Image (cartoon, rainbow, N blue to C red; front, side, top):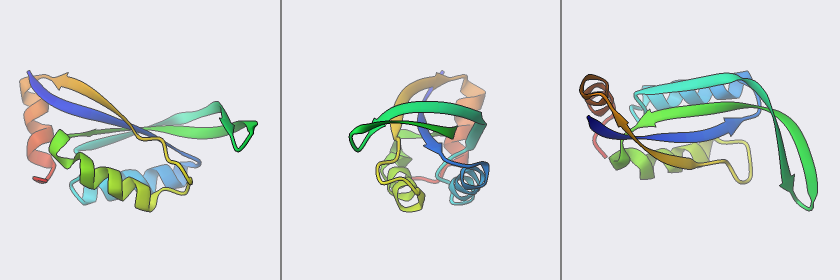
Length: 106
């Protein structure tokens, strides 16, 4: 088993989520990005309760790429405070090796 990370963020539209996914893969910051179907998010923001449609974005990458990936997400993201949740994960040897080979060295 090989260690990797999953980075979670949300985007407001399919188009923005797809553009982010493509950019992160093209720039070799992620091996794979999953854009999940629309969901409803309820959260507190600027003193009120907000209810918005969003897309959950799941980014599969390596820990060594995290700092560059995080900076890139912040630069591309339309939100003032983008979600950036990092989860440690373990992948099968073959899948983990693919992630490691696909993502450029940090």
